[in-house]
Length: 262
Image 1: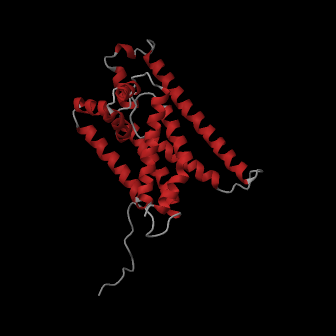
Image 2: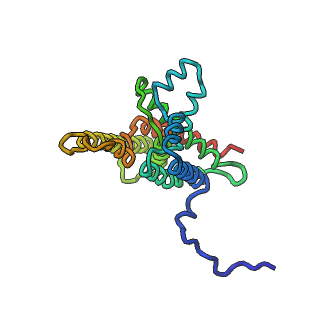
Image 3: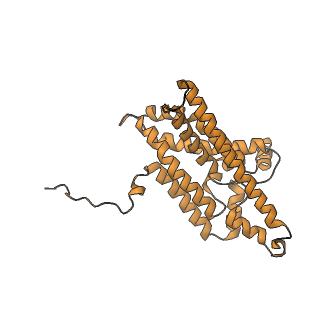
């Protein structure tokens, strides 16, 4: 006869146990792909990136030619690859933190055995990433500059978090219910937008400084490629904005999907 354990063993990683399975699954997929990219020859990696990177001009040319595989593939595939370890680490950390809170919110609104919040969450994540890519293409229709990474999807999770916060009661704000919600959304969104543009401007300014002759990096062979390996390219603020707005606006729809998906 089995007897219950009086002293169950505690996990060495309690914070990892608290992360929902769908969020862990997404982080695991991104991690395995990043390991594969790190182990693959540089030529193979460049070919893969060429297939999945969001290059607006190439995507628009493919759409005009009716080559829809070349249109859909980058919209979906770009979010599973990252330019370097720092890019990957920042996005995965953001996904694990924000994704846990967003999934728990979805899960709290569902009835046991009658819904599937995991499917709704994964669909929400993927569509946030695709919305970010769409915004990047729409705002840069003629550029061949590529964009890659899960930043747009992560930004969508933060958009959902802002909506979740705005729906809470804020007794310190001397405003009516609906006005409080709007105020919180506008205030937090404006703050995030300023931070995003500030980081973009700082990075772009830093590249200009490092490129100047005063730093002498221009005399070092391959310095810019090495810098990009460690820091990556400029921040794709358009993808961040697109994913964020999609997450902010569409999150209630996915909450309803989580409640009625079975």
